[in-house]
Image: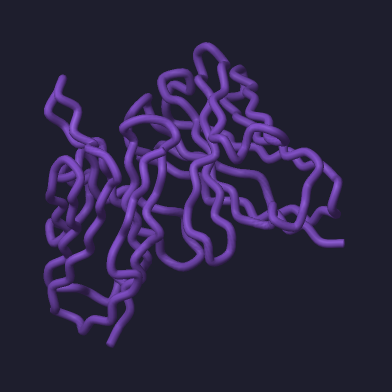
Length: 118
Length: 113
């Protein structure tokens, strides 16, 4: 069955970096883009961007251009989100989700909680 | 960026009632090339990831009960839930995928009366 399995919760200090993983299974990894969605406490869902799993080209939403890196390990059907120079506002749950271009998101990872605290 | 405005922000209902959630986009989501509106609805239960309910504004995702009905076109959309069940208590989000950045509505929290 189709699954997106994300890595475990993270506790980090301001200024540190974190790299989250999203392992896909049950489908051909390169048939769908991987999108990243942020859910900050009490702030709903925000699309961060996507990565084209065929060309490896990332596209970032404006608020996520500076410190956010999308990458792939195609041989392992895994996508990564790295957040550099963490700050308190990065405390959120991050979801990976698959979707074809200009299409809805039909499968989601379970989410990973990142807590940034001094 | 396309702004998605959802209403109401919360709704208290009794089991068996019908509820309507509205979503309005700041520009049309209807693509003339295929006459489809690029609008989806998601359900998110506490502690879970969002689940796709409706895409292309009115197409129900496989396995979604037929009491969930999406309607609308262009800029105005509605999610109707007939015969609400206790298991439907969740936050519902609309989302456009017409162009990047994709944006979500602020969500509608469905609670039991």
